[in-house]
Image (cartoon, rainbow, N blue to C red; front, side, top):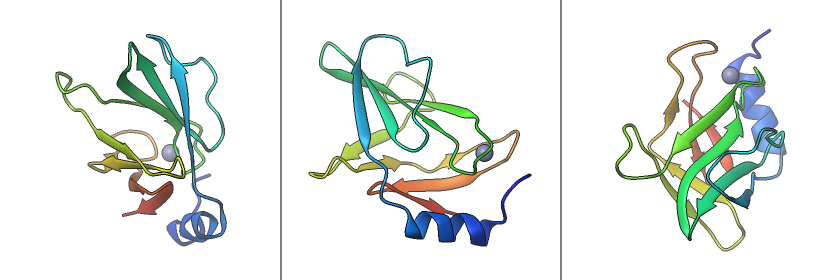
Length: 109
Ligand SMILES: [Zn+2]
């Protein structure tokens, strides 16, 4: 069952920020951590991030960072290893979640 948006916001507020976990290679990991965001890097180039949908539906999200891909996202990581993604993530199917990732926190739209 989908959690109401106020509950998702509350959970995010009281939870520690999400961190980046870097993996080397050309395939995303088969298993994703519950909260943290996996960054796939090959030959020094960041090419994708993977994480579970923060609504709790369990869907695996994979966002491409390479400019040639469409759509693609921009990732920045602060000193504490906390990621920011641009633009927002909007799932057109399933839970239809729409959110931003800013400094390791999910900001629900
Ligand atoms: Zn979801």
